[in-house]
Image (cartoon, rainbow, N blue to C red; front, side, top):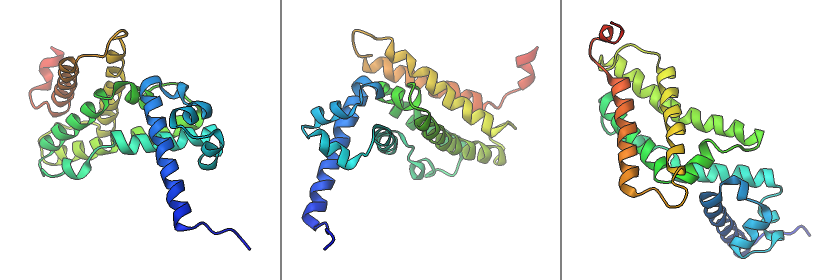
Length: 212
């Protein structure tokens, strides 16, 4: 007779998986993906190595699952909140605030998700992840152009530039080697990035003055 998982067994497995993913998040947040090994996650979670393999058949599969869980849980934008306003500039303000605040308040984790050298397979997933962010900004910029709030521009290029600014800004907190970057410094960095992008995308003055 084939084995059938009971509700109790499924609940136990779900609890184990959650415990492993929580341990993985803590490991990546402190040491990046380079610190995420099967043995390390087993030790950190208090479970046996065999239990890890029950949920993650290989290290590559473990990396992929942890990467997807962390991006979905910690960094994805709240699009319904962004679209509360129908005005593109307000949407852009909200999206930029979410984008930079979520990443820069979780600097080591965000660096691991956006920039840390990792396997080619995860790099492909990372590109999809960045595209999700870019697409939100593309749609806002297209709306702003339609509403005659933003000047004509390439929405894709502008959106990718915003993502690029975030990736570079993630290096700044990492320079605080011997202590965590103070909260007020993080808030200032978030505001500076937000204001820079807002000025770049929503500029409504005379472009010709830039090239005199």
